[in-house]
Amino acid sequence: MNFFLTYSGPLKAKQGDARAGQLDKKAGHVHQIRSTFHRQMRRLWQTNVSLKDKVSWRTDYGVEKRQPDGLSYISPNPDEREPLVDIVADLYQELGYRFVPLVREDWKIRCELDVLFLRMDPPGSIYEAGDIDNRIKTLLDALRRPLNHNELQGNETPKEDEDPFFTLLEDDKLVTDLRVRTGTLLEVEDEKALDQSYSRLLISVSIKPVQVTTFNLSFA
Image (cartoon, rainbow, N blue to C red; front, top):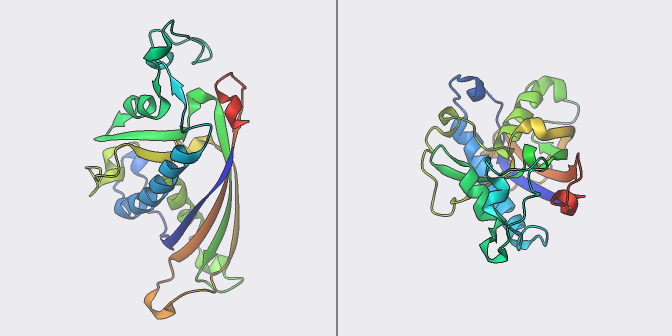
């Protein structure tokens, strides 16, 4: 499965590690970007033929009946099947939200990211910018579901259109390859109104099974 995600706006360097319990002063900034990707991922689930009409049995995801491949249990009653998006959302009822991550460990899929990162810095200034890695860390945090309350400071309650809340990743450790190309952003409406953190991203996402099952064949 291949698709693109886009983002235009500030992309600031990450400060602190909320995953380790440290105070994250940029939590609101990360969640704002996460919300941008939420809307795009929701659109993907609504339009992609492998996702929009996908149904399953809740027992496929129940720990007490889970089979070795995670999805081999077949209910005798087809009418018991429900939309997959609802099942996943109920599985990830966390921190006051219901999250729907697409790339999940138990689905035995991983993803590769190829990022075109256009920024305000002039050509050849990647070392002067100095914070490219930390800005990419901000991006990766925005692509996954938050893991603790530190990452939702100021956004403890989902907005009306954020139930469920869609993310690309369950965890950023499921990214197996990350390529970043940088360049200068030449098209800006009002350069004086923009700060140096303003960026435009085009993210090519490639999702692949790492162990083929009947369920994840649609990602092949």
